[in-house]
Length: 246
Image 1 (spheres, rainbow, N blue to C red):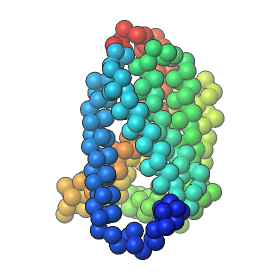
Image 2 (image 1 turned 60 degrees about the vertical axis):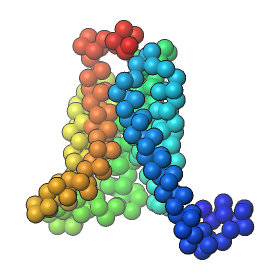
Image 3 (image 1 turned 135 degrees about the vertical axis):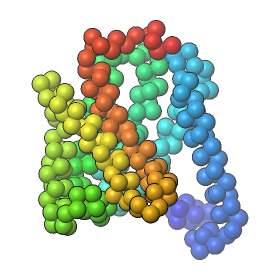
């Protein structure tokens, strides 16, 4: 905020210590949270015939995600891999809107989905491989779940990181698409639920689920994305047309 504040000749210390500013920020946070809630309900009733307001609100929240993840990336010293790791979380809302649009194309949505899944896992692999500093929570979760040492945890991360990087090209090879998607589904869901499993405290089960359940929910798309690829790859089983999208 410092560059923005300087334009209005406002000092950072004054901005931080102003209780009115804090109250305003909290008001807008709750307002945006309400829009997220409404959009999540609209998603459940979305169809080709949905009115423009429903689609507009979903688009607004989807675009707002770009700002949110930009701020997360800023916290990570603008590592581009951090931003691209959110590809599935950023892209799936737009794929949903595209699916319920008049210009929907099955072939196009499959190609886009391959890129979203591949880039997400590729960037995840970059962190596991140490291209970027390996996140401490990666190591901690591996140790907590597998019961191994820190050195063994780093070796395990290297292995899965190497596989994650390979997912991107393997998804575009017909012979390896199915097995790659199956692995991505399993690994995607495992990494999502790892937040709860690694931090689970038997004495406080509900508190653990409450604290880490949200982190799991927002990462479920890492398993859902490749699952869609796996299902939609069989065109004879899933016939997508305008009628079943109404």
